[in-house]
Image 1 (cartoon, rainbow, N blue to C red):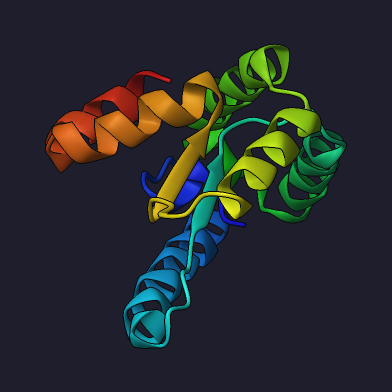
Image 2: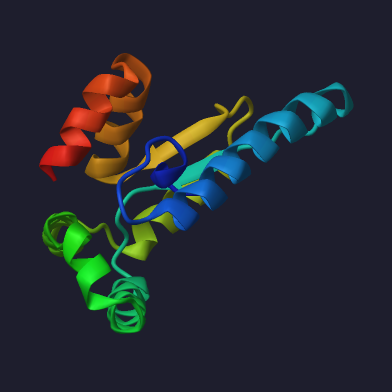
Length: 145
């Protein structure tokens, strides 16, 4: 179980993206290593899912912001505000956890599963953006969020 955040990075979420990018790389390596034994490694990459994680993100961010020198934080405030607005929109479009569970069930029963399965509208869009467009374009889009 990974996240679409393992394919494209946004400001402010560096540690989360690093963990998910690492999980994607580990999954690729593991898939190649165990394929000769008939073992398949599949990555499920949900976008926004309607879980309590969004409350945790908000609470954690508020705590982190309270610990940072406010003058230094001011430099990033516009970026933080854009990301928080993006998160609020993501919560509104988040898929129910059952959608992810149903996909997992379908994938488990596939004879030849794909290596990756993005979940949700945002997951599908980000997967395409990450594949089709150069980093400079993705950076521009991220700056507009």
